[in-house]
Image (cartoon, rainbow, N blue to C red; front, side, top):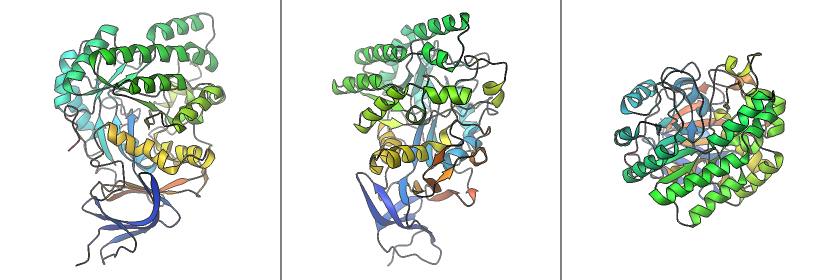
Length: 464
């Protein structure tokens, strides 16, 4: 008896771990049921012709800020997840800030889970937070299925009483001990608060408040000092570490060296550090402000070099949106403008344009950075991150020759500003499939906005 498929994606260049093959992909019950040539369609089978296109595993974006509860007017799960789906992302992890209350206890986690339920186009995970005063809450968060814990070594900013706060050294060390005992993982924003606060205050006092002044107030040294300190704590506590949005090759090398010594640590960078730089920040203004800041062209080239050498573990967007008045009010200095980049919809297209098309990296390597390696690091590789029979049918069609210029009208964010608007890209996502459901097509837009599921991870174990 012939196998019956709900969906067949035909004739695509299927990106597998380490190779690309022209294959059909058969989908049944939300899973990849078969890979082969000439798979037979039944009368009820949906067939998508992917001739001339890559078929990729969906991106897993481990770093987004949708800002619920209470700050959904900054983004929200519905608009944010729709934008990710349009960009080829089939699973994401939402950070514990800038929503209020931040996700630092089970009650706050429940509020966030309620906000996400029925409002996500694709699957999702939820981070918990490590802040001063919540050590006793970590076990409950782990038991409730957070993917891990996020901490800031520098001031995260934000609005509202009870907002997320940076950790002091004592909280960081004791928190890492606790997280290690729980079998969890800590994600760190690694910049020295002492260094950045001192330099920022000095710059503002002297009236140096432009884009390059901001970059100078958060130098590479601040990142290196914080990474070094956290690695020492990791070595002493046995806590698994994931360094978010690393912006310098020197920090990548420091993390890679620790990994070779046996520490369980990984490094993430973001598309904005790879495609934008200090010159971009000065030209574009606050829409390109982030922390750590964009670096020099030399730093950027060095970051590409260590990426090509396999020393970076994954790429995530750090999508961090806000209402336009917090970025563009004419009364704000560059230092006062909100620091966060809206970019999640463009991550996959940016990395294939710049990494594969412009720099000649293997398509398999870029796919691994966006999908396979995040899945392995965060306990999803039994379900997601690769194209193989038995895994979730999380698939993206990317036309490598459908060049276009990104316009604000293309963006599905709540607030349609991004440093990437006006950029000409050499490729385009044409369809996104999450667990066998077609959630986005370039012709129809988002066609399924609410079927995403929460993937809970318990005490360092795989998501069920």
